[in-house]
Length: 320
Image (tube, rainbow, N blue to C red; front, side, top):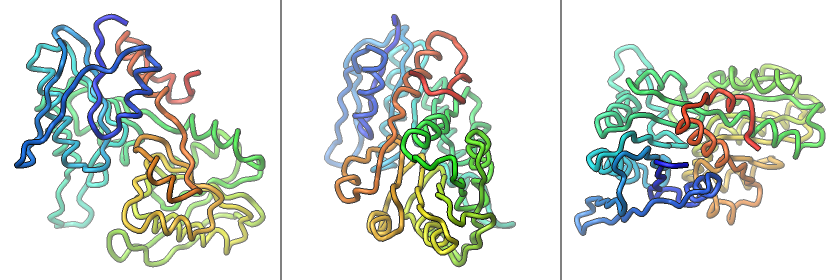
């Protein structure tokens, strides 16, 4: 493909390399360093004049440093006369801060702030995956392609869970009901949801199961798991309601704080995540974690965007 360059930020080099390999391209040269006062410095090591540039940087690890690095890389390419700069952000940072919860709350809407920062830095297009709230696309005045892990999740379920025809897809909270019903419809199985009440962030007070999982395999589906309190509580709830096995399938496995020890102690057969966030270290400490590779979905989105083709095929198919 002519006139295309792919650069990798430092958050997830492995995913960037897989995307480049899939497209038959070399990753562009970029040097990232920090001054002694912790300022980030990025130098693009090759010409991008007139090129269609894609910068891959996920919102994980040192999130603020990685976000700043992405903004600097976008700006560096833009002022070096790149014709178009697309930010490929597999896991969008600050996506959970997308609204004010209570009337009169002084909470920030940080997802909108991140959107403004990306636009001001010079991004012309955003490619991301499973946004926590899909209306975040409306925070941008530039095109946003929100890809879905759902086709890859359906493929994994059919290939790895022998009893999938006798399963129930479960949402660990009311917010994920839409996602769960979509997967349940496509598998032609039942769904259930767990209503949870929170007293404060990251702490769940009590849970109520709505639906039937007795003598069935329960598959918990959510867009992200951070401290894993919710999914581990939900797994216990499902086992006590008579589920034979419990799987969790999550797009973004953040796994911060006590997450790994909670998963190890919980009743999961497997906790399946995509590689929007690097998982190599986590997998060493937790044998239950399995990874679905989504690099081919992102690579195909880049190829189609570059060639001016429709991306909607990827909403329901995994590229071969």
